[in-house]
Image 1 (spheres, rainbow, N blue to C red):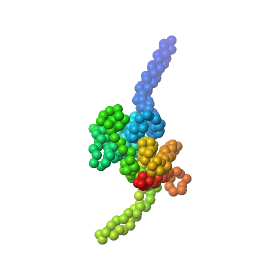
Image 2 (cartoon, rainbow, N blue to C red; image 1 turned 45 degrees about the vertical axis):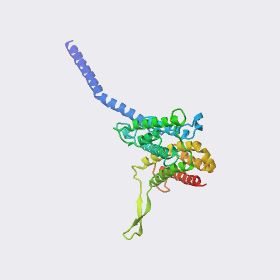
Image 3 (cartoon, rainbow, N blue to C red; image 1 turned 60 degrees about the vertical axis):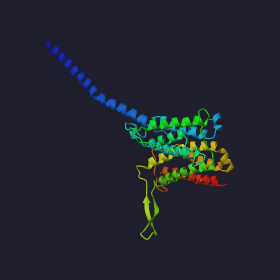
Image 4 (cartoon, rainbow, N blue to C red; image 1 turned 120 degrees about the vertical axis):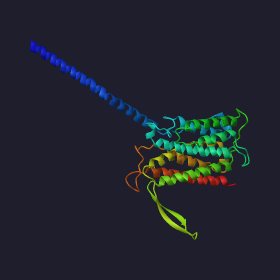
Amino acid sequence: MHFFQKTLMMCHRVVKRIRAADEISKVINLPGILSAFIFLILVFFSFHWSNEPGLIPTSHNESESVSGYRIVSTMIEVVDVLLNKPGGYLSNDVIPPSVWLDNIPSWEFGVLVQVRDLSKALRESFSRSQSQSSEDPDLSFAEPRFNVDHLSWAVPWPESEYAEGLEFLSSYLERLNGKRSPAAEFFSRADNLRYWLLTVETRLGSISQRLSSSVGKHRIAGLPDKESSAENVRRHVRTSWLLIDNVFYEARGTAWALVHFLRAVNIDFGDVLEKKKARASLQQIIYELESSLQIVHAPFILNGNGYGIFANHSLVMASYISRANAALIDLRELLSQG
């Protein structure tokens, strides 16, 4: 009997030790489990925030009969998407998961450059009857807000500056629509449109060259010598493989913003386009840019070489951008005639 009791006590002690060890293992594994759970959450948001926004549905408003209304309202909608898409504005984030992402920040920069160019055109050209006219006060305050460093994570804070720029644009739109005084002006003239399109042409040409450099190419550069004669020098230009996807998504952001702005131009400058017989050229530009925004089905941006078995997404994008730029050159030429 005594032996039986001792055996039971020993078994009881063993069970207690096993339970204690189990509790300790649970405590030890708890940080690992929490870390894995947090990591999965961050991965989920990384994929969710990496989705590019779709095109903004076109809307119709009675105020669209006011010249310039569609361009300004579209610009407001584009900046609103830039700031309030899933994840918000990501370019200046310094904590996970945003700090891991580079595709959407590159897309944001492409959009932002087009916003900056259009806000400059609004301030310097569209809202002024001639070069000696006074600048619109709202637009003179709005443009600098959009030119704040997009990577700044402290003061000035880009999100707040861009939001203030939206407020000034909204104020200008209300004055343009006659809801506030003094009344704002917008001049839908061919020379004003050509002024902005020249900037767009330059941007598209640069992006097309950067996209094409994904496979590397030789570029001839003229280097004048001491006697001022030109000597042709061949340089090999190629985009780093670390930057290929960045350039690709910057081009996507550029195309996304321009599709909206050019659709608005098609309305606000309708009379000018009809008079110059230039509407077909504008619609061709929009078509090429829309085609460049097709869904990328590959999990990453491929950089195939030549006629190999792998695709080269950068060259496909460059093809669309180049065709859009060619149509843009034709459009500017038509606007300059007669």
